[in-house]
Length: 343
Image 1: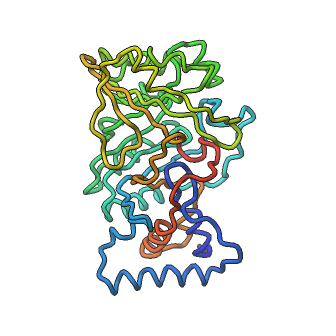
Image 2: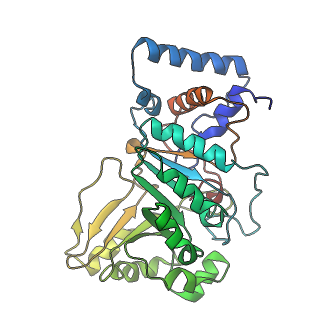
């Protein structure tokens, strides 16, 4: 196989968890220039005896121990905030399972502790159970998670848990069946709700005029179940007709439960967590648009449309990763459609 230019591979490999490329193309940059820059970084680290973990520390001192891996770009739903009604063009060539596992091994070997499988919809990947089983064998990997729309989860959950899956996020934006079909443009509400997973995180994208009136219903669902309902601000993506107006989500819940308690925050938190006294579960608020959390981001994402191993050795991949992380931007810029970046 003829290797593609190193600069091309660097641009395709990694993005931050929002899907923004961590290494945007430089006009007129030659493969030789990109290779020389990587070599200089490698030489500096060798001379200063810096551990490889420095490769996963960007220029803003953010250390990355959490890797998100997009499996397919395809999805069995058509959520309005995720893609336009006419769909999005998909990349014809995706990462192979072998490439995914090789990259995962490299990251875990260098101190990544958590891997989350995303999509598109990861549970339509034919060999997703085998991928989880292979990841579970990686020494040092503490958590294997999946973010799913839940349509195939009931059928696959026993196999996934046996293989080593340890964390589940379900995307669910309404508790009303008819509204569910309107938002996702497909049927399937009963497939998501019937199993009654416990514990689990529920990701709810809050949209004014559509499901904001269900905030209290979602919060009330944590009374008898160990759920973490995460209310997520509607974000701009290509084709979703985004128009930002800050919604006072926390204030809405506080008015109903003034005794709401704030929970301690993790250093790399993406949401502010609260608990209603006496309830088993909790609620969280992901306010990436009104109160960004990029400064504490510990995430990297491998998108499904890369081709990082076209003739590259493992040592070359290590260099690619180091250079890409070194160029990660301070904060979100323009986002591609959500389906292409893993939700």
